Length: 549
Image (cartoon, rainbow, N blue to C red; front, side):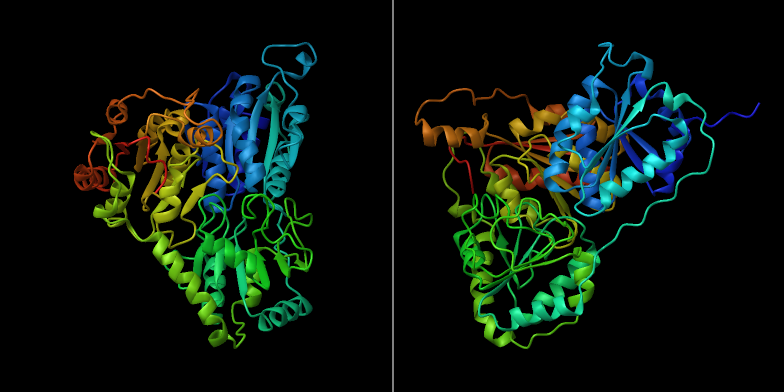
């Protein structure tokens, strides 16, 4: 007897139609019909160990590919655990779709097992919240969810799946993908931009945000280099312009240099592509806040959500559309702008230079300097390595020293969310196994989702994780010392042996307690990742008094 197609199968078939090759899931009885649809499908189901890790992987996939990452979780507890990644995707404008199994329709409004209202929970942090009420609309809702996640300012979308509805028969055709507009640059807008830049003495390009492609990043880089216009990048989005480009003068946000902030503030014309002058890059709404500043914002978001300061012009275009419009524009002012660019570039080169061993500060006995490990790593990195990190002082080493020479190559959290580094590295490694994925984690940050190391082993994600262990929540300890000197409270950690942790799961583990051990530890860990093809952890025990590079 021919098996009938149920709505769960239609959802899976629709995902395949949208080019999905991987979903990140923690199984639940509430969406068994979808799991049944995945059986035998050409979609890899990455079985994760906690819903927060699964949703972070989907968010990282969205950042890494530009296509919506897909996570699947069960009702109340599962949805609650996944919420952290939804908030991150909302603030970082990352396309992702979270499928959530729900209680049967007949059990609603009865405080049934794990019941919750997805509209109430997610309505303020998602672009749209769908609940499948009729099996016949299963494919349509998938198409609408993907369109909402990708269009305009990207973001997260929730699709609720009542466990009874997804078992009902699906009849009809699959809904095709809905085309997403890139916007455009009119002739008048292009003239406005080129005229403003041509008349500038100190122009700056500010890049970031989503909806970039490698081709768009290369075109914008070529435009900036050909015209000698310095480029600053948004916080934790420092891979739109290559690290080694002569126009890259630094990134804004926490950990930025005074030179980068000064150029951003002093620019007489700011051309923002994808990025917006929001809270963090403006140092808490203090940089470029004058009403007469010339800020030309190229952004596909009609609302410019999060923007602060003046808006001289808003060009409604994605980085892709804008790159097509300006790739061959030559302004003829390179000689005039070169000293302005060169000063910023020299400051950035000095800031990102690897620390000399002799220049590293003394550390406590049986501790190593994070700078020594990073220096050994950078010397051995392939050109196209991709880096992941979450939140905490340990991120300063990644932001400052790791060379982001191709797009995409930096996956991080602009909402300051911890626990991201390991899931993001899993997602990047699975999507591009030919590239080395390197996660930089703190001891507190790592253990928020360190269990996903087991997911990496199970699914063949060969990645390198460097855990900076200073026995504390370092960023909060710094704030604490500033506001309440000498009063240590609620910030200290007692940690396991992270190298043994790696070996227990079937990975490779190294421990570094002295700078002299860094080179061999990095070499052995990279051999395990690149040749043996297993994930590895380098456990770096550091002096808690040395918080930043």
